Amino acid sequence: MKVLLAINPEYVQNILSGIKKYEFRKSVAKQPVSSIIIYETVPTKKVVAEVEVVAVLKASPEELWSLTSDAAGTSKDFFDAYFTGREFAYAYKLGKVNRFDEPKELSEYGVTAAPQGFVYIK
Image 1 (spheres, helix red, strand yellow):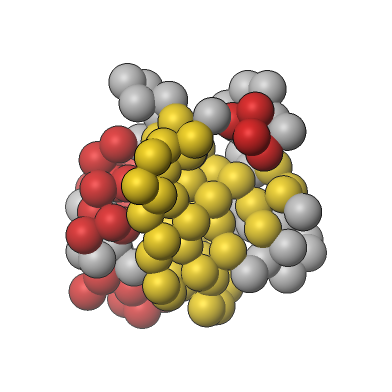
Image 2 (cartoon, rainbow, N blue to C red):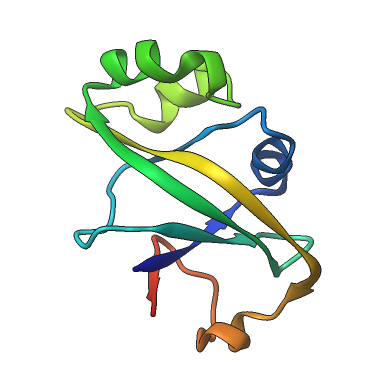
């Protein structure tokens, strides 16, 4: 199963360049995820890549940061603010990235609006 995620341009660029090897989320898909389809938010507003998911991590925010900080692609301050008050934090561990030659429209995936969380794609 694939999921489509909306990701800010700064983090998309970090994923595409290999700096960011984890995508952090407050919740994850209940079904196993083989890859993430990346929708780059404003100003791009296009689907720009697909990235393999090699693992899903679940831990306390403190533990998760210690496991992922070397390739988090984000600051500790942002990470802490994002997971404030959470018992658990999640991260998709990212593998091979396939950047599309031409960005795609959401409609090509049967999606009409950028997801707030995620959308399953078959």
